[in-house]
Image 1 (spheres, rainbow, N blue to C red):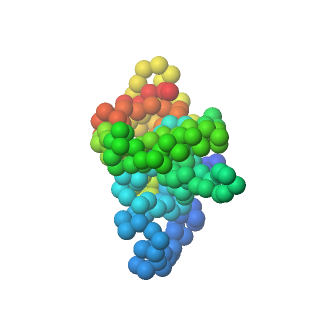
Image 2 (image 1 turned 90 degrees about the vertical axis):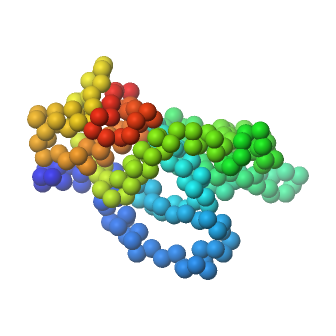
Image 3 (image 1 turned 90 degrees about the horizontal axis):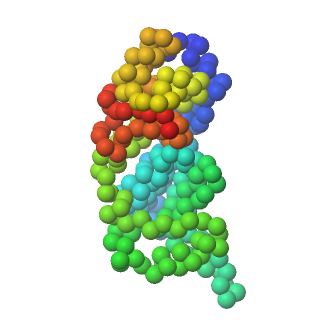
Length: 243
């Protein structure tokens, strides 16, 4: 990448893994096994949110998969994995109804998830309480079952790859995202390979595949582009369209 491109990243960049904040996570200490299993689920999993450059924890692989789906949903701005429930007052006493994830969208809508391994017909009593309490908070409740979360393995695989890309070489460059948007036609579609070829030929001869991937991931999440990642593995032949 040339010096001009680096300057644009510095001036218009957003929170991204190539800033000091993310690299500082390498030195994070969690206190060893005793701390890991004190008051926490035995299947505690950890990863990093590539958009916030912060560590996140999950009590099961199913919860992690649900987070992947939510965190990469178009128009999402934040996924709060530390949401342990909604607190309310009942009969003069403070109570909490369980929840697993709180997702906020650009339009201000918030969705609170309760993840269960069983089918919807076996919903726990916590779900019925969450339905009632969420209304008072102005939040949309969602019961997320294993069948629903893992209904599309291709999509989950693509999102997992995108998350890994974000941890390794994500570059959030708003100027470059504007260039990509200008290449993609308002009507019709292009493949990822065609976009890279067009950028190299007319706009940015030094662009790399990784830089383009970063831009496409961010533009998909922001709702500005659509891609067929639910139908086929992400790659050079992935179809890109304006939203």
